[in-house]
Amino acid sequence: MAYIFTLIFLFLLALLYLKIADKFNIVDKPNERSSHTKVTIRGAGIIFYAASVIYFVSSGFQYTWFFLGLSLLTYISFLDDIRGVHPNWRLFIHLVSVLCMVYEFGVFNYPWYYLVLAFVFTIGVINAYNFMDGINGMTALCTLVMGGLLLYVNTTVNYIEQDFLIFTLLGVVVFGFFNFRKKAVCFAGDVGPAVLSFMLLFALGKLILKTGDFTYVLFLAVYGIEIGWSVARRVYQGYHIFEPHRTFLLHMLSNEVGHSSLLVSAMYGLVQLFLGAAVIYIVQFGATVQWSFAIVTLAGLSAFYLILKQHIFNNYYIKGEERYAIRHRRMRIVKARRNKKAYLVPEVRLVKEAKIVDMPKKENSEELLRSGVRP
Image (cartoon, rainbow, N blue to C red; front, side):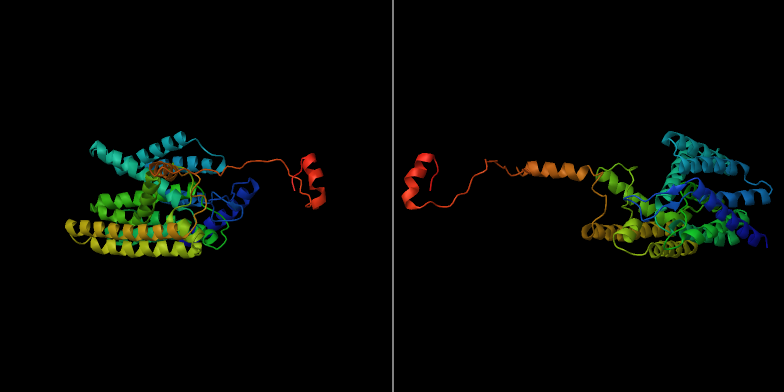
């Protein structure tokens, strides 16, 4: 019964936020990179934090340090949705938030490089989650899949309080009601992916610490492959990696190929669901089998991803792709120089306007010659 009341409360809270956001113009305006075509309310991901507050209070203020880090992350992300935040401040708050979560794990007795890896991985996933929030339904559906997998594992491993995951998923269900549509009522904004990724990473971290099986990281494999290869491509081709773009495969499938954004989100969710189910089955075997499974899976998914993406690049025009390109222009110039070719504009000579006259009769030709006009 408590879950039903929570669901209703979150739904009413979401409706209230939509009215407030509309009044204070907290909106996302479409641009050349957008998949949407009309002004849409953003920042609705604040509902995820509201769900975490309900859990925090009802649990007797459990996971205090984690909740402190989550609150700081929510504040800076929501502020970014409202008026923008300097990247240095945002990065600083991210670091402090991760520090709070690591302290909650109680792993400060580990070697220092473990902590560095934890910082890099966590901040990377937070930003990856934000990048992937590009089309309707993606954040909601993929989070429901991953949360459902973590919830299923928790029934046997018992690595975290079950309500932590349930209240998180209730917030996702409410958000999905407004976002998983052909024309979304609202977007999660920066605050939504930040809060969700932080909460899921906390649960995933506790699972790995409890079991010692790093194979569970593959719960994030779909996002990891998308972000990893996209960033690698932009670095190789000379793009600025933080420059806004729409060359993620999910954007291209929806915008250029023309598939429904909901269909694309469903495909990503199904791939992650099958992969997660395979992970849950594989972890019962030894380390050799798990490593072999991870390598084969990542290699296979990467090959499929790269082939499909290159096919789209070869057969579709990607809007805005050429704007921030550096490397391909430089390579074209170098190639032209090597082949001793140049791209020249044909020379055009301007002449005075000529007067056109009828051919004179033969008997008047001598007179015309004296006047300077040739027959």
